[in-house]
Length: 560
Image (cartoon, rainbow, N blue to C red; front, side):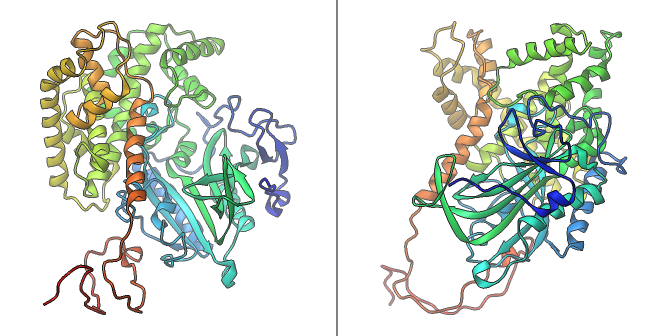
């Protein structure tokens, strides 16, 4: 049994027709009778570069994010949703993930399983999230981020109990009204793509919302759970219906800001002060001034349009991608040599990546995380050292703490943090000192670890890279840099390896959570009310009053 079509009245009322994409084979809804692609393919360029699709937002950076977030939250409050404060970026309530990767993660596993009531129903939230699987593409693609806010509206329906708030029809209608009425987007720019979603043992029908070639939102109708005898098969697994029907949506705040700004890259719309400052610190103007006849704005604009149709993902061969860019730019009348292309785009990619990494790092440390070589601490250390390496490659002499101070002032002003400002900067100063010490000792580590590797090798085995990182804190890209200086001149980091490192740590967390077998602590079982999880009501609450219902000896404990 396959998923049925998502055929809703809201589509027909607004003049949408259902068509099948000739490239992806996915079904989609559009107002354009002649359209043959779903909007998110290798033939659908961004249409908003230099021509914003969302009007009325002239601001940039934090002011733009604040305004767009408020528009979203107020819209859904007006539709009967309760605004809920964002949860921490460290998923302390989860054993299987280190970081909050989506807004629905706030309510897993207890709310989504039906064990605990949500803090409000329906609710709306804008949740800061961190995902490091795309870290290698950040800065290069023009759109990838490691840290972002997932704006959302969630509903937890219990049809078997007669509690149904709304389902597909109303969800899509809310989305369409937000885009067209509240934000003024032309319906002709919108496609709704049917693409079922599954993950974490759950699944459901889903609609991807594509605007101007950019995916702005995903609407998931989660109503199935994984089961070997389920009658629906998705991506090799079988699913059956579950008691709850959950609306799980995600609207990318930063992508909405980009569509409103129309800048060549997403970074210039959300981090304008940071990118300008880093260009000054790195003397980027001296690079671009070498070719006064080259129209840099035209180059970046065309590159951004190409970014929308090219596969700039972790794992893609960088050299092959560069040659493809040069060929396609030439076809569009932008004649640039390989030397010019690399001289301009490589430092720009680093300039764009630094504020993104700082944003994730400051959020993690601000939430109380301490860098280390394991678990969530590894993720913070990896970002800190990537930032330091990018800074050094740009010949910027400002300390990591100074970079963070500037970032907090212009991009995080007023954000509530568990860690003090001085404490956060102190951690970064210590991390930079440890980074310097690692560089000093790294040569000996390299010579020991690579002693059996031929000098003409082009790759360092993955397990050696994993070991150098986990045991010595030597990140893969830094290990390769040191190896080249030590005589292995041809080695390089496999594209996407850093993302695999982050995924490896995430997988270890999931495996550890699955391996834990919960054993009863006491022999006697009492009939007592369920404990109320207060952290779902107020994530900032530090103290509470509780009543002791019973005192029992632990299993195996001798009580005098």
